[in-house]
Amino acid sequence: MFAPVLIGLVPAALATVVVKRQDTQNAASFAKIVDPKKECKWYSEPTLSKIMDKQFPSTEGIASIVDGDEDAKKIWQEIQDSGIIPGHVKVKDGSSNNYSVDSSALHDYNTKSDPDCWWTASKCTTPKTNADKIGSDLERCEEPSTWGLTFDDGPHCAHNEFYNFLQEHKLRASMFFIGSNVVSYPLQAQRALVDGHDLCVHSWSHHSMTTLSNEQVFAELYYTAKAIKVVTGATPQCWRPPFGDTDDRVRAIAAGLGMRNVLWDKDTDDWKMDEGTGQSEIESNYRKIISRANSTSPIVLAHEVSTHTMNMFMTMYPEIEKAFQHIVPVTACVNATKPGPEDITYPNFAQYVSGDIGAKGQPDGENIKVNADAKYQPTPLAQQTQKGSFMNPNVDATSSSANSTSSGSSDSASSGNSTSTDANSSNDKSSETDSTVKSAAMRVSVSLMALFIPLFVAML
Image (cartoon, rainbow, N blue to C red; front, side):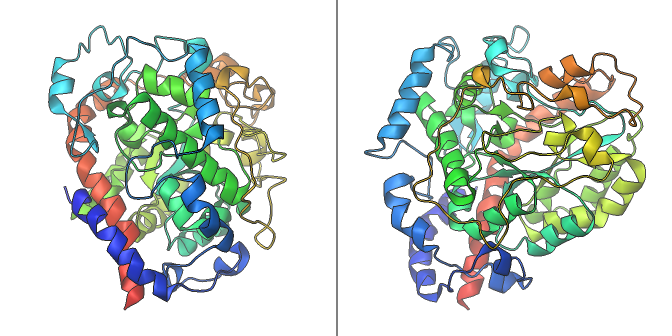
């Protein structure tokens, strides 16, 4: 609702803030800052500043292929030529400048036959077209009493206290980054890799993906992944659609870029605090998930979108830790030990729960650099045959100490379908559909306000 106004304000505001930019530091020194005002003071990374106009789209709207970007055009053509994009799945009508799906599109869609496997309408997670090349959406962890720890909408400029908390409590998470945030806050993005978190894509501009054209979907994903590669050196092979809005057309384009779709089984709705929802209501949402620790192992949706949402997790963590046997990132959840082509190895579930939580091979905070010459060269999901990838998890290393009763763990980890039964899961999700669509524009306004308000404060 406020998004169009904020976007219109951005150019003038940044033109003023640019005068106040602080000197660039490296990721290690920047991680020591815990004053939010100092963290959010706008800065210029010299290498990134030189290539922004030529290699990346504007940070102010929906991404499109940059003029003259022959690498992007070549990869996009290869995806189209592969035939993976289903022709029968059409672009959905959007509203609020494509920040949400139009209600009429939902009303007119046949949810019973659900030909598009459209999650927003049906909560469908197993593709109906090219499933062998795409893989089912990941929603749950295989081992019992496991909390899949994920945070959307980062990197937030003032996240050091939160990341310090994760370090102190020996936690690693899956971070779903917005591309425009990565290029705006590169040092913050670098810290995530240095600390050993999973780096995943959450689109360039946080619009409803099914309302975008094929080329726009490609650009939203491609340039976010490229930003992560240029800024951190890591190639992301996981992604989450804003609002969960995906279908087989969007999944196929993501699969062509080598990205496995990660959704969630439980939602904290923590972002609503920035719209005025009281803390007690969000605490109640957390406790509903916590109360089912013995019956479900959900990937849980939470946010890095504001200090409110980050503080909420820190507040609730003691209760989560007490109830759940394990709190793990998605890589450990599905035994994806090699989630990218770089020589970086993440712990499998057994290693993680035994205390060996650190990734190996990632750069440290002193040496990680923005690399203008980094080549983003995605491998389609269907061609990711290396052991430990999101399409071929390292299931041989499943924890024996977790006392899992599942005999089909390897098949389930690969498909993303939990063997444990959650009797109320489908009912819970169906009731979420209308509220998800209605709240989409509000959630984007929160993201934008969280991004730009700290910049305005830094000017004072």
